[in-house]
Image (spheres, rainbow over the protein chains, first blue to last red):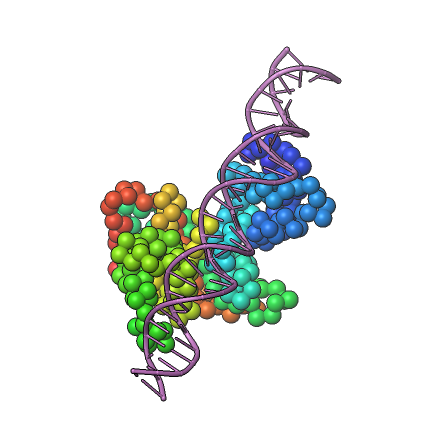
Length: 142
Length: 142
DNA sequence: TTGTAAACAAGAATAATTATCAACTAAGAA
DNA sequence: TTCTTAGTTGATAATTATTCTTGTTTACAA
């Protein structure tokens, strides 16, 4: 995966990448650092930032701006939206083809002058009711 | 407006509020500070932050997280979405009732377990083609 | 007009992120 | 396998965004 994107394969990138791509969370740089540190005490914070940054530049991850004042990193490359919990600041991925097409089709009917649309993302705000239970989306129409 | 929200009316709040509510931009705290400073050299950065924060708490403005690493403040209280220019980092308001209803109706048909939706916002990414011209949205269907 | 809680200015403190730079290492060439 | 080199890393300094502290001032209710 790294090679495909012309990135040198280093231990640091493997460790950080593994965490980022396996758990599709939306960690801050700090989160990543804390998580990998126990097994890799020599990796520095600067490396975490640089590594995350190189993933973003390579298109392997995306930055997500938050109102908490820190940047989160999203390694889910599939087309998806976000559920944002206003209480816990947690971001949950939300994939729904139907919703995506609905909005995409509508946007195409609009004529936005002087702006070239590349993509879009829906942020659905609200709150997780029971923190230890998962959030599951069911579609009631077929 | 300030009184309605139980905020003491001070010169600083009037000046900052005027800038924020009249130009529906999405300034950073820094932007606000630079803008008002010429005519109000004694207002401090801390006051700008505190004032913006009190507007947010009073529901007069909203924080917008960005990938630039700074918080922007949005004083447009109407239901609206954002066009986000990936080149200039500028955020442009985008209001479209039809789009909003489309998504709102669809979300209501979904059964999202363990998450209570309060609202949503669509971020439309792309780029402004000619920086000095305005972005205008036209609807080609009726 | 006055008392008081709230708001302010200035600058120190903290937190997040980026820059610097010497030492190290991946990976292609010999 | 060894050499070479450009890219990467770790330590830490620097920068940037934001919040905190403190003494002073101000809005506004009584």
